[in-house]
Length: 207
Image 1 (cartoon, rainbow, N blue to C red):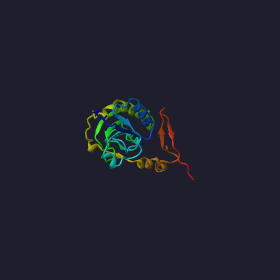
Image 2 (image 1 turned 180 degrees about the horizontal axis):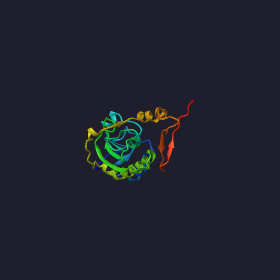
Image 3 (image 1 turned 120 degrees about the vertical axis):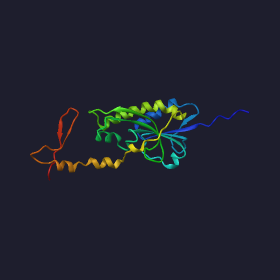
Image 4 (image 1 turned 180 degrees about the vertical axis):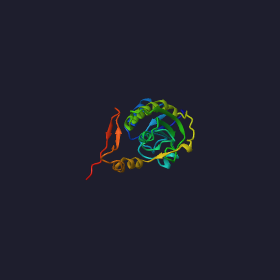
């Protein structure tokens, strides 16, 4: 009697960004035998999140193998806007964290962190561009090992944990009180320094 073939293990790469679509396209060309890429999370056995814009519910994370490529170093930069907060906090490094997904916000055990240097010329946009390139590299390096369960994951050190929410960035966008506080006609007003080292003044216009 001929042995029935093993059923395919279904893999979903969940994403809402272009870099995630690049990962999907690469995975389609490099999917190991006995694995199948699927589009919907519900039917998948394994979920790999690449900048997915939705939080996976407990019915997903408790019943499937779930991984995430997080833009930021964990546990210091959980949540949203890690590159922006890295610059605000004047940290000299950022990075990408590959971790398991659990019921918390970026609290799952860490598989790998790859760091890169933050320079004086960086902006949130430039860090995002470099981070995306690193995500793509890490995805290719780890894809087959994740499917084959060839990884070690370690708990996050909670004493270092910080979580940032999307609304936190919205709050600091309004500079009104700072511009008003530094408005005095005979004194220097608020400013920012561009990448050429030039001060650009922010003037308060009355009326």
